[in-house]
Length: 335
Length: 107
Figure 1 (cartoon, helix red, strand yellow):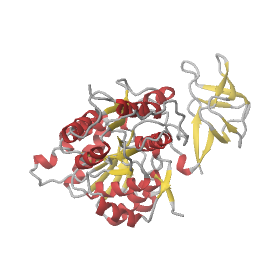
Figure 2 (cartoon, chains in turn green, orange; figure 1 turned 90 degrees about the vertical axis):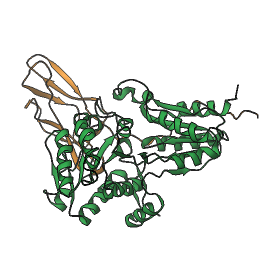
Figure 3 (cartoon, chains in turn cyan, orange; figure 1 turned 60 degrees about the horizontal axis):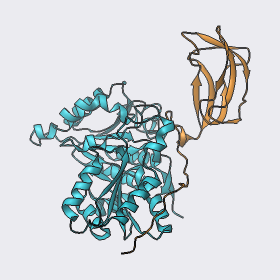
Figure 4 (cartoon, chains in turn red, purple; figure 1 turned 45 degrees about the horizontal axis):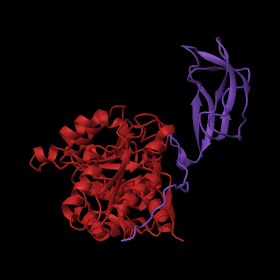
């Protein structure tokens, strides 16, 4: 029986190995040192690697990113954490006008190998500012890459890819999946396999199917797999595509999947309007227009501020909302 | 195992402390979030405080009859090391309940 590991432990393992392998790697943020992170992701790292390489910062997100830029200029490989997605807003100026542009501004002289670990999305009944979905904002910024793991082994491998990359990457960790345990092979093997088979910007079909493609990332991948299993009870064969990278988007992978299923539903937690579902829908239309048997459907959060815990289940796409969208693609007939 | 500790909140407008009258839970008890946990008396009133989370009580920090200051530790819950998130709740792995059924139309 294969070993299982939670995503939080998988990321901890990856950080531990990165810190061991590369003297230039530094891990810092609010409570990541002594406490080990509010999600235990950095548990034990300060004790093992020393408080000059894994350390606590003041509650100043702008400074966390500003410091990352300075460290990167001087040859370090910073892996900062902003404790919750909602607290990325105070850091936006440093992220967008400095970090994302420094390489461009210096005509490539100053690579920015900064990986921002950002616990993201909802599903844990957290208070306000602790459950945002900022992926569309980050993906819109030239110079930033955006990665979102959906499972422990991907979290491990993706994080290693992000840290090794010379560009800044926003690594959005789906909070609601931190504790879920899944099969996890030998870490080194998994990393080598991912590196060989899934370079940066490549998605993965996590469940093959014939009738419709569900495009998702983060925690919505597990939700879509549930939907696929329910749809199978009704004889509908659903393919689930885990994007893994939101910038760059895997246009070829999306087109290949929708090209053969001929129907697509994009699922995300973020609000609908101007969300990534719109971008992906447009890409599918541009690339698969002749194959499509129905307009691309979107199932998303609503255009409201992220709701309080008791209302969360009404906001996050439910299996029923996704199933209803699948049904719309099945029923559609050209007028 | 890690403990998650809750402090005494300000129960009124600028109250400084409260006297613990009676604990309704004991270390080792499993309590549901919102269940009655402790009865305390302030200079303004006697109130029953609900449990702030679901879990197993690890320690009570103030004896019955003792005075707890606002902001000082009141109660600790036991938490698995990998579930000791300070903000939010670990979601349960639930089998989803469906209402929508799919039908493949005749072509």
